[in-house]
Length: 274
Image 1: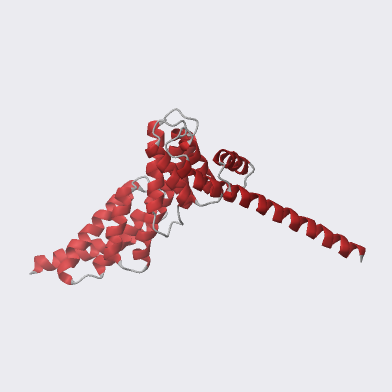
Image 2 (image 1 turned 180 degrees about the horizontal axis):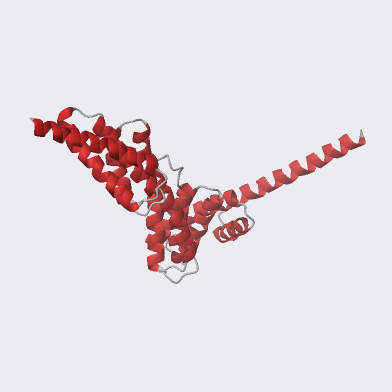
């Protein structure tokens, strides 16, 4: 009985503290003492209470527009949004800070944060990667503008990570056509992937899929298209083995070569007889 009473009293105290805290914050929100509100917004931010700091800074953005504190308020509002994991709004306010206060002391960090906020929004590789490219562009701009800043190494690391995601996305798109046996589309997609990312870690596999796609497209073609496609598949074989003479796909590639050569030789013999 005593323990239940003790828990009830403790719960009541916690509730009272929360109610008091909410009441105090509501008074700050309603206050017209903007210097006090600004001071409390900074305090809330430093204490990690980003919802409260963001609420106050949102109002103060308009109140202090055109003053010497305007850029600082934009900066902390953006940081409050970041703390709330609202990366879209955080990036927006960092961008606004850069455009409206180009000489601000916060511009350098804001430029990095624009790219970083997009990085945090970058989706899984199978989804649209527009935001990923936006992040790469923003981070590269930061590196170009501030090549000697301490964050450059981190920006380069993020760019590498994002580039890997774009490469993987392109690889998945090409492989999808290949897996569904749409070899005509696969050839185009695989070419594009290899051209766009020539140093990809998937290069050997992509080149083999291109060879196999050309081969299967050729042997399944109507007669008037077969010879040209067989010749293209044969050329692709030589390109592949020249670059990867000891490839793990070597045995299967050799079978394609034998079959393709045989079909082309048969075609030549047929033409000579006629």
